[in-house]
Amino acid sequence: MPKMLVVNYDKCTGCRLCELVCSVKHEGVSNPSRARIHITKWEMEGIMMPMVCNQCEPAPCIDACPTNARSWDEHLGRVVIDYDRCIECKTCVAVCPFGAVSFDHVAGRIISCDLCDGDPACVNFCETEAIQYVDASEINKRRQREAAEKLYESMRKFTMAPAG
Amino acid sequence: MKVIVIGNGVAGNTASSTIRRLDGQAEITIISEEIYPEYSPCALPQYLAGELSRPNVFLRTKRDYSRERTKTIFGQKVTSISPEDRRVSLDTTSLTYDKLIIATGSKPVMLPIKGTNLDGVFPLKSLGDADQIFHYTGNTAVIIGSGPIGVETSVALSKRGLQIYLIEVLNRIMPRVFDETPSSLLRGILEERGVRVLTGEKVISIVGNGKVEGIVTDKHRIKCDMVVLGAGMKPNIELAQQSGVNIGALGGIAVTQQMMTNLDNIYACGDCVETEDRASGEHTLSLLWHNARRQGEVAGYSCSGVPKSYLGSENITSLDIFGVHAVSFGSIEADGNQHQDIEVIERFLGKNYYRLIIAQSRLIGAQSIGNAQDMGALLCALIRRDNLSEIKRAIDKKTLPLNPLYYRIARCLGPNIRRL
Image: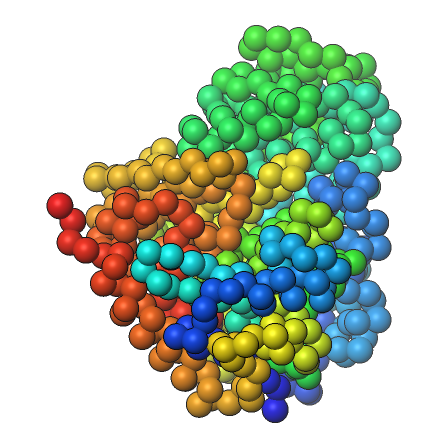
């Protein structure tokens, strides 16, 4: 069975080590802006949220790609990109519901999580095990959804105070 | 089952591949006027700019068709369809079908001006057009019409070192895709790179002796070596119309959600059909890649007897203007027949610009320039017609990015909202 990344928001301390190791592994530099995972922080509310490609199936980015540069890799259960075909129209960046596809301005190419070909660096370095690499079973997918729901509920309290 | 697909674009090919996936026995034939295997028209500007090699414009090779056991008849025009005896006639032969898929796409709108037949005047629709523009020599080009195709062509030819004049009859560029502020920001980017943008100017004629020498507008005379017509596209429906297929009010083939036409065993998909807009519910001509692909898939399922529904078109424009990413979803504020109470939220964040258009607590449109990573979540809200009254307060209070907030919208829906 392919595996998937699962994020446990309660465990994330916002240390951003995942961003660093991701950029080191893929680009050879320590540069969070070139990472394929990003921690979104709302410091005052204590919310730390790792945002990373969800490896959707069917995926909006694959659907929208006008050159078939993005496709589904059955073996690892991930979206892959063929740079020979990519025309950098960035439609995938615009349609990703998770904001998980980005354009690397240094290398001049589209990047998104490739699961490090089956050995994700972010998982290996996450000290609190906030990111885990587990079987892509339906039950794990459901857990992931429920965790996101819970997070949203806690976030509401801070962000959606009555108007006035 | 004998299936004939007329048209070799993304809709026709997706339909054909879908049928093959579902039915190993079907006899599928794709007929196309063009001689090439499937290519991406969206990649033509990059080819023109010299950024993408010609072979990479293609999405399939002839071998891919034979591997899928799909017959091809390229370089031949279908002259008529007779639904009574389920027969399609070509220039030299005729074929019978059990199911027919019309995916004839769109064609350039020709301007009612003099001189469009001169040497050096090109539309930009097909690979053949792009080849001609690519090999045409000259120093100055005039692009008539500033829709996304006109703008992308201007960028591409400018990168090749040509002096570009981009002419738009309305008062701003990409008038159907962006409102005033973002449009003028984009104009600034073009002008910074040397593209001369002329708005509110009408081209009266193209002049020259056999070959283009210049154009005349209601304000200027401009010398040029080449003219690219970017006045838009319209559904290519003549063949369908002559065969008795019903045409909708907007000029596209009328289809059901299963991509069926009014005639038995005849389906249609892609740029030639008219559909409902998923966000507004109104009829629309979408003429966009992703919609054509989904329509092709639904048509393929329908032909194979699997009931699937097309949920409607999504109006998504995304283009790169000299490295700056410009995106527009849904409706713009300046659209006609617009809802009454429109609220516009604008945000400048460093080099990035966002514009949200909200009507009755629902997001009906969004535009961005620069980083577009928040746009996907907004697209979900738009398509789902989410009530934004709560979220809107948060938008008012917070600066973008909104990802943590919209993450939930996206997360709950997952990619399912985009399922067929």
